[in-house]
Image 1 (cartoon, rainbow, N blue to C red):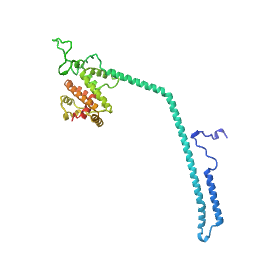
Image 2 (cartoon, rainbow, N blue to C red):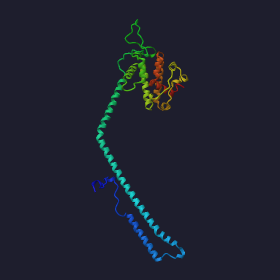
Image 3 (cartoon, rainbow, N blue to C red):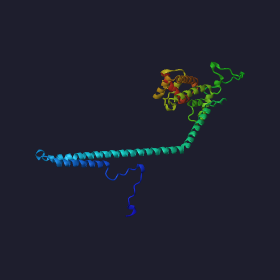
Image 4 (tube, one colour):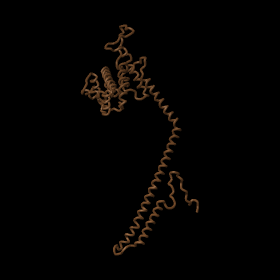
Length: 346
């Protein structure tokens, strides 16, 4: 016979392999065999001593009774032996399974420790790089958001609040006196253009939005515009703590004439179309925050007053397209949301 036809030895799986069956009778089988033999011997001795009895009483039934008397106990003995044998096999399989699970758990722990030892420095280095990148981004944001101490050059576009022209026929003193109604000369020192003001009201889209940061810096240099921008920034930050973001809202658009009527002082149902926020969850969260958080409530009322005053002061100089652009900004959406919660449009 060739070597190819010889049976190959089984693969040794160690603790995962099934134990080889023992050769010979199982202890339970031996006990059952001995008990069965003893019972049969007792029955034979009984029949030899007593006999089958009188045929006139039982007749042929006596043979059936003798067979049942001998075989039924033997059958019960072997059933009990099989039950004991099955229980022992199940117990052995359970122990083998438990040993296998312990070994697998030990292997998993060992591999995890080895992976942590091998990859730990790389992961820590990556985390450090991410943290440093976040710090650099925060520093850049603070740099762009901080207004410069030197006045910025006015934009060539039409400013929101025109700067007063000096009278050439009079010699003004070196220090210009305060204007009427509490308006100081600093309010007009750095007028911001309408386009920059609208861009600043929407805030920069990303950390790389240089145009947005430039417009925001120029708006912060204008005192009137900076009041609204800072109030809007505060309320947007507070809203974000509850997971409310203006980009997730999709308000109904109102025609510019309703914004003009609101700027002229109309309130209630006549300008209800301005409260175009329909997101129930955002409205419910904002209303609950207004009732429970006094800091949020004060910031919201301050923002609403500032938005109202700013819009009233610039609405006459804005075109319909510019008003529509303002309505699309994050600041205007925050005004719509808070206005509905505060009942301005009721």
